[in-house]
Amino acid sequence: MLDLQDGPEERQAVATGLEQLTEWATGISFDDIPPDVSASAALVLFDDIGAMVAARAEPELARLQDGLLTHRAVEEATVFRGGRTRTDRYSAAIANGAASDWCELDEGYRVTSCHAGIYILPALLAEAEATALPANQVIRSLVVAYEVVTRFARTFPTITQTFHPHAAYSAIGAAAATGLARGLSSETLRAALTNATTCVAPGPSSHTGAGALVRNVWPALGAGNGMRAADWADCGITGLAGSPYDVFATGFGADCKPTEMTQGLGGIWAITQNFQKLHACCQFLHSSVETMLDLRQKFGDAVSPENIARITIETHPRAQKLDGTRPETTLGAKFSLPHAAAAVAVLGHAGADSFAAHRLDDPDINALRHKVEILPFEALPDWPNDRPSRIGLTLQDGTKVESECLSARGGPDRPFAREEILEKIDGICDPVYPALGGVARQAIALDAGLLNQPWDKAVAEITGSG
Image 1 (cartoon, rainbow, N blue to C red):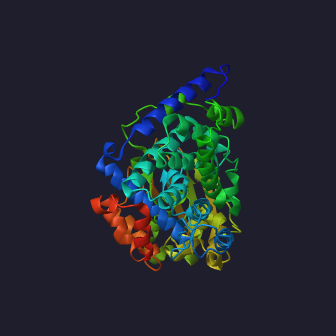
Image 2: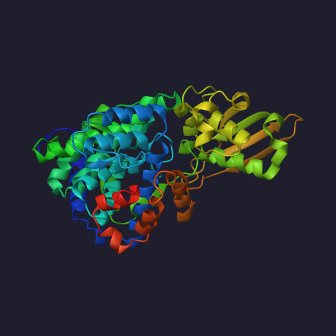
């Protein structure tokens, strides 16, 4: 691979680490992955399909997907919107990528900001269906690609202070998944990753709180760019060994930790350090959601919306920034701490309906949004309690009640039971894919019959078209 010999030592260290990472990645077989890790990956796979299905009725997404399906030339991969609507693998990856984060029900990586599953799966699902990749190789590719993209996120962790991880890392996840599914050599996979690094998008983190819906399509852009990056690598088109450093450290100004590319490979698998969601909003807000739910459970009618005079929320720095009191879009609502707290106070949950379009002008929610004061959580605890929330409610008679949550459920320290996530998936998918839950449970149980069959056959069973 082309490279420049000059430059900082960190640049060469990252390039060397990437070489070691891709050699490791291409050498991992399905049998090398512990069964519990494969089962966790199967849950991530179907959880993120559920997140894609959940967005099928969103009007902007429907128009986007309809546009992609207008000029279908070849039907090789499924768009998960109900039924088995198929198109070429690149368009399917883009369509599913746009759906994957729309409802904020996708999983993410708890160690640093990175939603690795949705950077990998739109491309991987499309490639696997188009090529009849065995289901066990889908799981293997997911586990290993998850390791690769989270290594990038750990190597350049401060990038997300400026750019959203969906923009910064999705092309890398898609390139890793596509390359692994295709069985590329370590050198060609490395070329695909350096190509993808130069194809990332500078999507500002601030766009989430502002409610800019373009943020929802960054995983779609990454899916398409990452797949093409693998195509180009196979043609001999490559970046530089130093491209990751050049883009993320030199170009984007991120801190660089070269040892994170390889430290502990094969030890704690990254996919077991993820978080999963039952609440349909930014994970930074989940501790506040759980605190408000706890207050409702403890105090009942005493904390009814009309009896609340003020809501004081002490929380971590990431949540403090999400302070919009008048979200204009559903995305803005999902990234508004005042809206999330008010919606839970009024409705008693933080499901998709709490952030739907008709809730943006809900008078009861709007009234409470303007009663929220956000303050720093003093003496912020260490990870995994680094995203805490403490909520104090001042009632109309002057009474004050308080509760706190140091770490929301769903992360590696407080994981959901697998059946809780499966029930969430059932609730989303049963209306359009009633067979999906059964296939998901087979996959999590590592059923040999399912794992050895081609992925396109599994999709046919899921969609009821087999």
